[in-house]
Amino acid sequence: MKNIIIGTAGHIDHGKTTLIKALTGRETDTLDEEKKRGISINLGFTYFDLPSGKRAGIVDVPGHEKFIKNMLAGASGLDIVMFVVAADEGVMPQTVEHLDILTFLNIKNGIIVLTKSDTVDDEFKELVKEDIIERVQGTFLENSEIIEVDSISRNGINDLMNKIDIMSKDLEDKDESSPARLNIDRVFSIKGFGTVVTGTLIEGKISVDDDLSIYPKDLKTKIRSIQVHGESVNTAYAGQRTAINISNAKVEDINRGDVLASFNSVEEAMMLDVKISLVNHNNKNLKHWDRLRLYHGTREILCRVVPLDKEEIKCGESGYAQLRLEETIVSKKGDKFVLRNYSPMETIGGGVIIDTSPKKHKRFDDKVIQALQVKEKGELKDILEEYLKHNLKSYPTMKEIMSYSGDNEENVKLAISKLLDENKIIVINNMYSHINQYEKLKESTLNLLNDYHKKFRLRTGILKEEVRSKIESKFKTKDMDILLAKLSDESLIKVVENKVSLYNFEVKFNPKQIEIKDDIHKKLKSCGLDTLLTIDEVCLNNNYKEVLEAMIGNSVEKLDDTYVMDKKTYESSKEILVKYLNDNKEITLGEYRDLVGSSRKNCMIILENFDRNKVTKRIDNKRILF
Image (cartoon, rainbow, N blue to C red; front, side):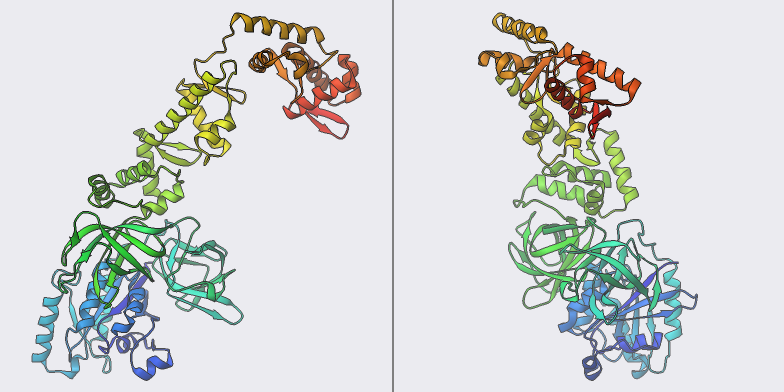
């Protein structure tokens, strides 16, 4: 079943609250001050059943200029707007401002409701209608039907309900496949339950016992219970107004404007790249560093504007800009917003978020403008390629890419698959990188190895961990293993045990070093298992140490930080042990000493090496095969 949210908009005292009472039989003015003054100050919520049986949530938003912030909060997530104009007054200042706001928030479906229609004669009513039709030209309400009602006598109420019912059939389905996101518009505490937040679930779904976060503070919370239209449910779906009882969060820790969402599903930022459009009826132009009020979801944030493609954005025009925020915001690409003057507070424009994690841009940069054009209008594949191409300081996961794109998982995975097929991006342990970024990693790795080989000509290679720390410290060990495997597949490097070298690199000894090599080999081989030599005992000087380092892993086995051993003797002692354990399952230190005919001390050093290399596993005083 489609989840329908209907809202009112219009000038103060044009009968919005009374209209809702006529539709639902319920009062949405609940505060004493609201009832006393006869105006809506806060958001009012209720619901009613349509003739077809569908249940619609309804939001009563304030019309007074001083409460426009609450109106913006209520307009977030509306499916259908009842645009209310009183027949006895016609179009008024807040009527126009509400219309601007709804247009910038990309509300697509609306009904013009002419309230108090029984209080004026037909001639005056027709004049008001003509004025309304003229005012809504070029907006989403152009060609919308005007329905006359009188909420007191209920004339026209049934016609209005039938019209809403018909319109609800053509509404687009909400996105339930994306991570959950709810803009919080109220927060309060109920005795015996704790903290409750309310809002319209914009996308995804939320179920009891889900673990979510409240942004921008990133408060981890668990869902205790959910109510939709006053009834307890196990799951709330995109498009529903919900009241959610949460744990691990106090009322004082949460504010209207915060966002309840799945972990890591939204981008936090202090800057936004946007496309701004300005209204054409207030002569307000936007200049560099103008201070504005940004309204996004249920949040108000102060910001500075930096026009990117022109000196100033003139009234009635559009342009690209970067907003430098005074507080952190969480948003997704494609989100709509409204802009108001810092002072005097009037709506001057709105727009769409193009990039939620931009760098600081210089003005009039052609590359920046071209990239914004792609991000605004390009295919999702092109948008994600641009994102990864310029995201050089991190390696986003699929969830982070979804958060940036604002699209659902299926579409993002399809776009990523195309980019992988076209070899424009690579994936490293579920992290994604543009091919340009990979090429830079490749170049850095090869340069590191080349410099290392020049400095240490007799060393077989550099430790993998050292490569990771010097090339990309953000990588974990398994991430570096994947990168090195890719480079190895391209025959650029080779990885032997735990050391990395250039693919064609080989240790080459000069005649003097060959003599030293033969001397070391002779010493170790002659010792066998009877005597284990220390590195200092083998090496007469630094030249010996350099040659020994090159031999380790080839003809020499390094048992620990002190002792070394002839490689063939080492392998033989291991073969003897493995054969014994295959036949007898376990062995003691004394049994191994008798088996190989060496000293207890030597056998202890060798066995501990086997333990470290996962040949054996020690259990109490015995060893078994690992």
